Length: 146
Image (cartoon, rainbow, N blue to C red; front, top):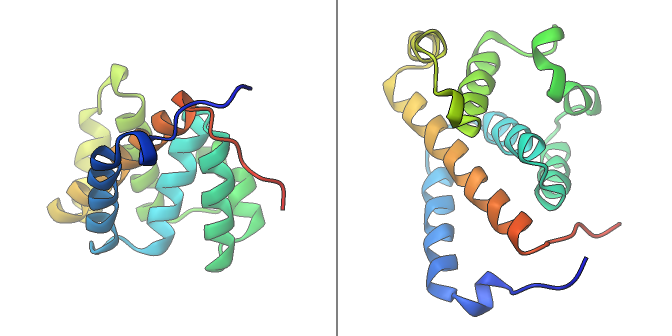
């Protein structure tokens, strides 16, 4: 793939705004595990190799298991995720695949399990990773082999 613009260099104010959103998400009550699940799953759906690479490394660094990471794209078919994690994943997926809307069932389940503020934070985290994925994909960001 050919090299494309670097948003941070070309439009630093836009990049700074994205970092502001990321800083907000870092200040929320979202657990590190939930943040990583949102980031990895959104990146899988969007096909952002750069973000998948980065966020799976981050998840492993805080103790996420390989088994759960490998099974994340089939989380509904595994016993590996808690009820709360399933609510986070379902809501994140529906925000990512917004053309299908967020279903009433997914929304009501998330509210019942997580509460209003946590659901709002999950939504914002899903929105943020979708924006980062779009930057990565549009600018051909490539992961680096370790």
